[in-house]
Image (tube, rainbow, N blue to C red):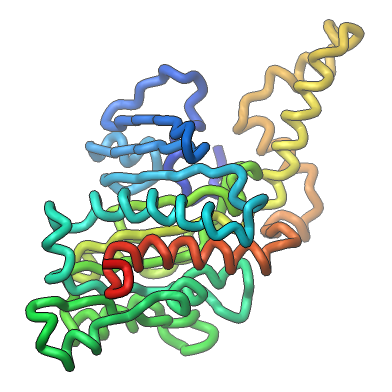
Length: 325
């Protein structure tokens, strides 16, 4: 499949779904799924354990966790739901940190990086999350009663159009100066399915390539570039226009399949036989040239981004801040 026809997605779970069938095994890729009936959340863990698996999935070796809450948007403003999802995020984040016991958290120095553009709402998850964080590094540095506690520091590097610098360059400088034990990078992602827009949280211990989901790859933030572990937290807020057309096409095929008079229709049978790659090729060939590079976000993104940012911040605060201890 030609690169320009690739389905844009930052989610490891969607990369796995490119391989049809519930029991399809990919060499070097392990998948675990669980439904939390209490919180009505689907938890999927994907671990890429070999270079072969990384090549097939198109993602670095490491652990990826997705928390899918399809009612996240419906519950905007619901403080109880925000706390539920924040607690789940905190739990999964803890397992990715370079500690084994919760008592060790206080001696961990954490730098949170809010990637994205605060002036462009779909790209503002990182800056909005940092705005809701309880940063504590300065408190611990100035007050010796906290002993070896190190706490959270945070930064919002902005985007290249604002600063003239790569986000990675700015983060590298800060990391070299304050020497954190771990970096948590937060960024808006791109989804490969409309059902996951504003409803899926992904955590990854592989770092992040800002802008990769929309084909605008910047310098990576990972252990190789920064010298410390980098955990990425993201929520998909945009989707490629062609993907929306594909989702609509699949729904149309499903509806037409229920009509008996469509059975045997040559055009319908050909359309039904298309795999995902063939559907995307057809869509991209038919789309207006102006739409080929178009990404779309839901109309209620203003309210959604604030709710999502507060949810992510709550999870991080729950682990590290003074008021949640």
